Image 1 (cartoon, rainbow over the protein chains, first blue to last red):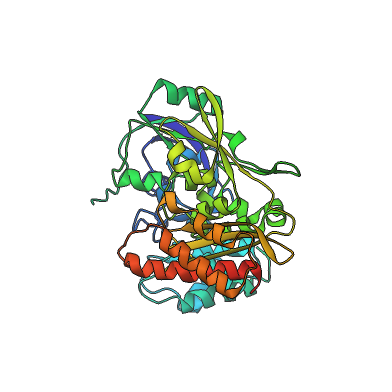
Image 2 (cartoon, rainbow over the protein chains, first blue to last red):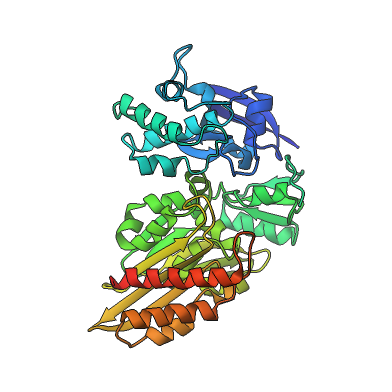
Length: 158
Length: 286
């Protein structure tokens, strides 16, 4: 059965009809066309579907879409300002923290959640903050370096 | 086991109060599955495990998402409080730092943000991370059903809670003023993985002798989580390295656990001995 749901994604208000058995990830990708958040393991192991919901980092593959009712969501699409990359995205590019790129949206959203909560994270805090994420190409050294550099670049600001 | 990428169809129920939830459970006996944070339930639904026609989400019950403290009664935590909110709570950090500390070490940011303390308990997995700490603290839970409330110890919860009932609140008594605690876990990867084994302990030492001691184990079968034999051994004794080693040995001998894909049961018992020893040593500062 479909229910109407209203929520805010990357600052835009949306009203969509969703079936109760749809996950937030499915609705973001298939209904709204926001394919930045990735479906990989689809069971919470890889972090590729991570989004920020009401300020908290969550897994959209394990969230029912209807439970995002009235929530405010930030996906990877909401970070860049037009053609200007977000400092975290730029840091990932500069540090070679991207290879195939499939895990990057998840990592970058997690990095944003880390820096939002702890503007000057330690290396251990960064590692803990990305502990739900899996990258099978580059390894994690460049990713941790990129997040560290981004945090320093952003000067403790959001 | 086949993993389906899509959820099966179900009827979604979203009560706003505990009373409504109990009424729904009563009118659709045996047909309702309860969901708290969803990290376990949504996953299992995709595995087609334990599915029922109705899924009842507790997320709209605001009365179950709180953390409060009272000098006499201690901490009270709503079943829907997220693990992260407990880890971050200033009152939990101040009054019961072992609980905040243990919650901080559970899983990943995403699972802590989504996962709730009530859900972690209700899944009744041997590996549910919050159980050993709550047992060590002597915590109790309020179970609600159509007839009313009852309060049971966390260590008895696995056999007390029946289908159609709801875990509503968790009560954590304040530890004695000078009680010391220790918590250790072993996981393949520090954060992401469930603890293969873990141990939590709370010890009160008066005039060099151990007056109250509780030792709880994780990764073992639910009925053997409280290491009563070790507690009896330590109780009334001066806590020496030798006693700690004996207590850890006894804890490891008296629990039940099984092999998993990583480790044999024998190896896990060895691990448990070390983890229990470390938790006890941490507590007494040895």
